[in-house]
Image (cartoon, rainbow, N blue to C red; front, side, top):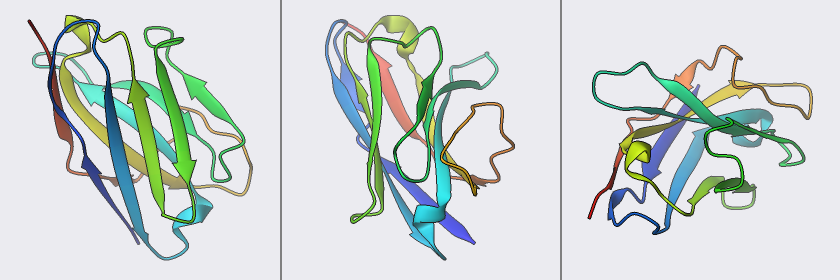
Length: 125
């Protein structure tokens, strides 16, 4: 069983930055790949990016490449989503999710089976 808790959301102006955190707890939390997802009102949930269990591999959606960076500190059981050059269309509830993995690779299309409660990010002037 894995528990994930997001924090760091809030209101930011276009062009600004925000860092989200996802604290992972439970049995062997560092065994899990972690993905970040978001859902805007009236839209389907979409993948933002993911990081492998060791942190050696990341993947990003085209919409955030070059602007968002995922990292993890396994000593603190925390995964971060650094968001720069934010746009109004980045407004959404952001979720982190976990899936166990034997390999140091992550994919957004994997069937993530543990989810956090989400944190709201609003980009507006």
